[in-house]
Amino acid sequence: MSTDSHPDGGRRQVRLLIVDDSNIVRRRIERSQRLGEIEVVGTASNGIEALELARRTDPDLVTMDLTMPQMDGIECISRLIELKPSMRILVISALADKATAVQAMEQGANGFLHKPFTDRQLNDAIAELIF
Amino acid sequence: MLREEELKTFVDGTTRYFEVAAQQPATIGSPYLLEGEPAMHDYTGIISISGKREGVVYFTAPRAMLTVLLMKMQENDFSHESMRDLVGEVANTISGNARRDFGHDFVISVPSVLTGDKPDIPHKPGARSFVIPINWRSHSAKLVVSLT
Image (cartoon, rainbow over all chains, first blue to last red; front, side, top):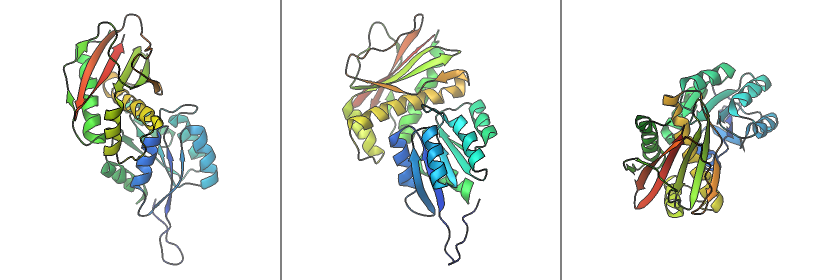
C-alpha cells in the first residue's frame, strides 16, 4: 500500500482505525500518529464497535487488539477483510505464541506487534504496512 | 501445579513490561510461595486462565505507583477509570506474553479489576500461588501467579 497522490500534488492521508479495549493503549497509539501522513478516523473498544466504525469511516489501516469483550480480534479481522479486502491490519497484542500470530495472518492480518511496545516499534510496524 | 521454574516466564514478562512500557526497569524480588491471603494494594487487575492450565494471574499496585506509571506513559488522565484500565492492561500483557512459553492453549480472559485492600480473588483448588515482588522507583507492587 502506498499513500496515493491527490490531484493537487499533495498526498492522501492514510485513514487509521484503532481497536483496543484499553483506553490507555488507544490514546497511546493515537498520540503517536498525530503528525504525518496518518489520520485517525476512529477508535473502538471491541470488534462490534470496530465493524460499525469501519463501515462509516472506510479506514485503510486498522490496529487490532485480540483479547477483547463481545467480539475478539480474530473474528473481527475476518469480518473487516470481507468488508474491504484491501484494508491493512496490524495486530497489536500481548499474545506472544506463534500459533496466534499464524491464526491472525490466516484471517487476513498483515503484521503483528507484541505488547509492550515502544513508539519506535509501533511507527516502524505501521510504516512497514503502508509505505 | 505451577512449578518454580515456570515462574521465570512471569518474572521475565514483568521485567519486560517495566523496561518497555515504563521505560525504567523494575527490581524484581525473589518469588515466594503464598500462604494465606496476600497483602493487596489499591487496584488489582485479574486474568482468569483456562485451557491446559487453570487459575488466575493478578497484578496489584498502589494508586501512587500507577499514577507515576501513567505519567511515564505521557498520560494526563489519572482518574479511577484510568487506574482500573492500567492494572488490567499490565495483568493482560504479562499473562499474554506468557503464551510464548505456555503455548496457545494457555487461554487468558479479558481483565477484571477489583479495588480496595481486601478484594475477593477467585482461587482454584489445587493451585499453588506464588508472589513475585515488584519494586519500581519508591513503590512496591506484586504479581501473583496461581495455576494448577
